[in-house]
Length: 329
Image (cartoon, rainbow, N blue to C red):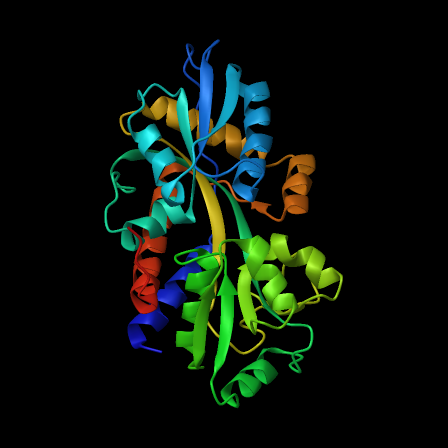
């Protein structure tokens, strides 16, 4: 692994361990009032981002007032939804439930992006983080990461790993794992998780580094084996599975995350009030438990912390995309 990549990973590990502090602000007297607040999710209904956003939007409506409506605006890896928010009026009535992909990866992945994630939005708060797991086929002889790497290096043609498609975080995480460990590994892209997960269970692919929420039922049922998680600490619902660091792969922290952003020019009073409301709601143990059941942890941050976090993530993922060679039109 190059020195540059090692430094990037260490910086990411540090960022992931930072403690967020909620913003302190009062909502403007006339916001949101009786306004319709549209929260655009750039992905399909029923996915993790959609479910987590709807849970929070319902609570925000109760806390701040207004009529909060979640709208799925899909396409181009989330870019279409982000473009819609960029073009909206900066009055606090249109929000993007953005993700690691739309804020920190897509600008390096797509040949053309019609928005600038750093310049075209006002950052509100990080909402959630979830973890990935290194999983292998149930018949694989490895019982831990060290044994898997030893097994992989003995395969004459190397090994392969599956993902839900080129440019997805499971694809990029697999490429990073290959680069960090030095194993010979080939990416096998599928049309989605509905195809990639059965391939791993059947042993058609050798490993995956994918969303822990998606794979938890399969892990619990013994249909795949979890060798490690990619978060900085053991995952609460799977405490028996070690972190990558504990398993011997240092500085390998990969978390997926979501954040709220508003159109550029939205008044700071609105941005800060929304951020403070999210931080306050995140103290509710019932909501935190609901998020954990869905496979995520509530991680509120101030507007400044959110923007700085997204920028640190861009530095890392720019290098990972370069390593992968992935490109999207």
